[in-house]
Image (cartoon, rainbow, N blue to C red):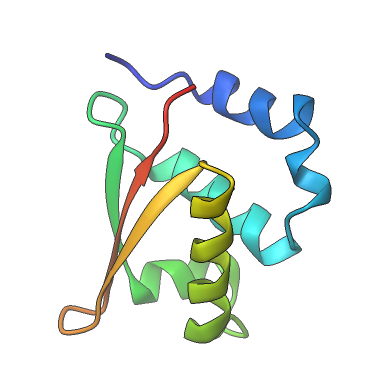
Length: 94
């Protein structure tokens, strides 16, 4: 099944989730939508890629809070791999 990026974005706006998300959470979710493997709905980013895309002022603690919120709203599941300095994610399909 192919991920529908437009549909993923539409859900955030139609359900007014964007009002409940911080700017960091929105930016992280958009990054995931851009980088997701369309067939599997999953992806992997290393910490340097995240810093490059979201800015070097993003701290790991902020990303952990953002990931908790994204999971709470059933947008994405995020797994940190500290030994590899990677973030694995899976977008929930709507």
